[in-house]
Length: 140
Image 1 (cartoon, rainbow, N blue to C red):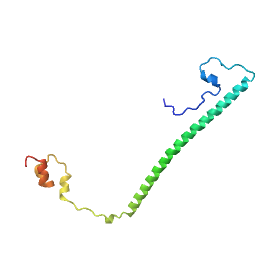
Image 2: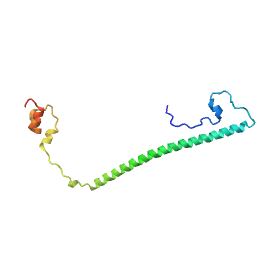
Image 3: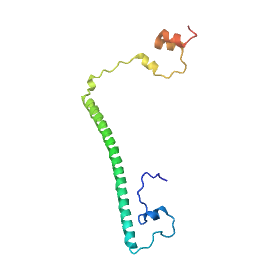
Image 4: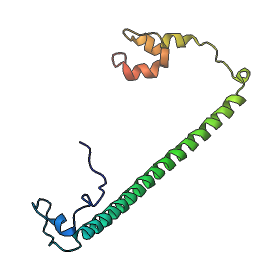
């Protein structure tokens, strides 16, 4: 069940203020008068206007929240658009002929192969004597 965030009041527009205090009353407690129908019509009309005013107030809150949310989305999308524009300028200025390609290094093949069991000779050849002295206490 969803949580109630906003409530339109009055809920029952045909009840007077005395009857609104007693929602489970069996019979109305308003004394009968000559203009009872006119009084009931006036109460119903005024409560309907109050309900419409409450609805207008709630709709104003909803549209204000919606405006704030859409403004933040607009700001974020403008930031993303600027980043895309900068990136497209960099891509247009990119010249692949100016990029230098590294030469093949023989030890890169050794480094990228899976090693089952590192030996002291392999460690020594990769990073020198200093690394082997730190990692292999048996040789030191």
